[in-house]
Length: 200
Length: 374
Image 1 (cartoon, each protein chain N blue to C red):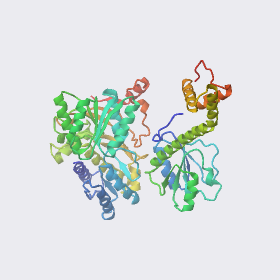
Image 2 (image 1 turned 180 degrees about the vertical axis):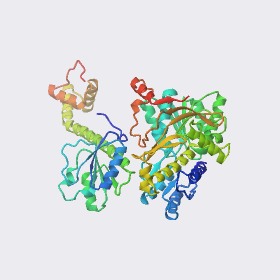
Image 3 (image 1 turned 30 degrees about the vertical axis):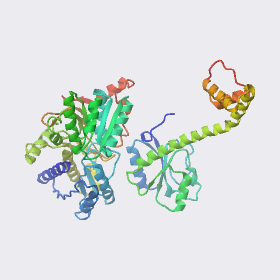
């Protein structure tokens, strides 16, 4: 996966979900200046299913709070919320949308670039954090397997728990695999697998 | 110094317009001098609009002062005509940016450095937004081309104690120094480095994108020589418009006085404004903004016009070397006015630099729009 700098915005695709013509023209103009491509969508309509966009600019005031449309915008792309009304009811709705950044109306040319950079950066951080959490969860799931493998080696080689774990760790390193992967193999073959070739 | 250069140039342009038969109106100048005190720009600008009812304001040299003025001109729908080059990343509908955008000043200079001097650069600058952003651009282009920033040294604005940095440069002998110091800091640094390098028998190329002729005089004839400078204007530009401008300048301000890039740009601001008013038939801000768009003016620095996409100007980037006599000798200029790109969104890093991985195609393509000025 190529990792784009949050500062490089040219060529990225923005979806504008806005109603006010003056504000649309300000955002459109600024996005054009930045070399981004633009799609527009009526806030009153159901979002298109597979819109491949990099960022969604949503006018928060254009979508009724108690509508079916309120949460369907919670898609993969980061959301920049345009905020006019600062009532807690609107802000609560906004929090559910998890905006990556926001702009206060009335809009001016300054600010959108910052909102985009912050949105792209926080979207990337969310992806990174989700991947990290998934790795951690994998490791938690494998703990039972590792524990079983340690017990197996302790019994088979008459080792202490610490020594058995060290043996598994060193063997895993030598075989260039993970402790979790090697542990699964130990359980499968009923002891330390006798590898003559390195596996990737 | 810049404030007086800019005021002199604006008043010169206003006098020329008021005397000219080409314009059926006259400008009345209302002068305010916030004296570089950032907070005073807001007050001065508000006063001009509320008390004097001006529609158009020419001025602001630093970005800090411009940022004070922008909220007022946006709220009251006035136009600020901004003469100075700046670091970019702004595009207000109520500002006409007549100075160079970063693609028109920093980028050509870094490209020249990579192609002809070195990719290993020592950066020194004043500790504020101009240096921070310029250094970021330098770093991005240089590292993308496989070069590196050897050091980045910052001095507070106005600081003239430069000896420790000069010593470091003499010790480390970098292939090139990129100087974004401003005012007295820059003059002190250039004098001290020149003295130390001469004593050590070294010759270290220096780059700047803000040096101008009146500053060369302040630095002194010996220390000011040899600095490679990027600018849209030099006094030495050939061409009838500039020769006539320089002659009028000297007739008005004295034979030993020199125009500067920021002075000339202020003159261009007033001229662009007058021509847009003439074209619009009114001084109304919206009408003037529309009339200024794409309206070419053959200025001292060559053809210039406002790009309505971002309110910055098409203008011609140039590179020159400072020579004895406090002048610049131009050795490169773009062969046509370059489109302003204030957000550097069209900066193509793969097409710049000397890295071995860069394709020959990119090099050939680039040289097509470059022209060597003899």
